[in-house]
Image (tube, rainbow, N blue to C red; front, top):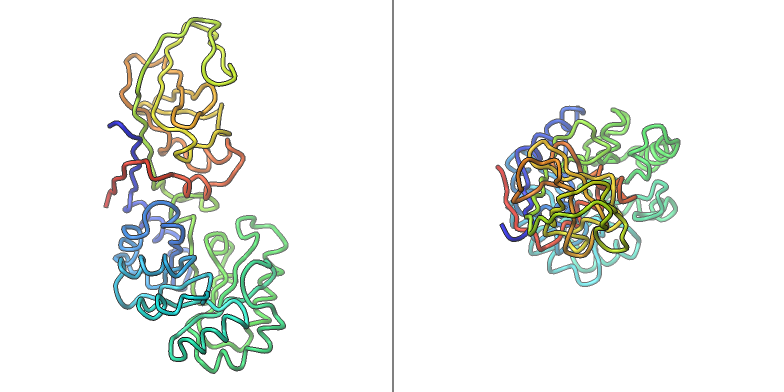
Length: 344
């Protein structure tokens, strides 16, 4: 193994979907945007479709085309960005469902694809995507007369259970959709965990499927193995890596592994993170550089040929916390240099 290797466990992913689905009495879809959070939209969407998922969500029409190829005809493939300029051919060819975000998109969709089904996205307070309350009030009658497939919104603070914004958005969404007879959705992973009043007609988890918080019960989906290029002896008092940021306090053995911030293992991660030889933790020492990470393997009784940085002991959220970011960013940053394998 000359490059870092990413293993995606589709069995764990479908387990996480089933576990989230079991927390509700309604349908459960799946968000597979950003190439299924960096893990491969085609195999992930296929595995979820096999499990019974019938509602998929992506960011853009181009992503939707890939998911449609994977899941075949039948399931809904919805586009968060709605009907953008130039999307009509993709939407028609791949039977994609744009989630209308503005009066301009509604007009564009009706003119370009008058007989093509769509969904509605409402802004219930996040001020990111969706129809504002005033625009929705104006469009509501005409839009609902065309029988949209879904009406939905998104929580700004769904991963913070006690945040008052959740109740505020819930009430706004209820007010905006009172009397609406088409399927409604407000909950992603966080909202799914907030309880039944947030579930409406279906939930659409994303990060929880892939092993990330706020779903604490998630099984890890990704493991990352890093090949060891070299192991060297470092005398007490010698330093390792850029900026002399780590000094050996004892005679040490330092392994250099083939991965770095170009592979999504952020430079800010630094100290406090381990790699693993089996169950034995081996601390990362010195700064993470573009293609290389240095690891203290002094306490290993053998010279390792690879070390694992993501596993059941250390999750994407552990790496994210060390880097001062979120698990989403770690997952979606795992770049193209990894060789990849899937466990079904």
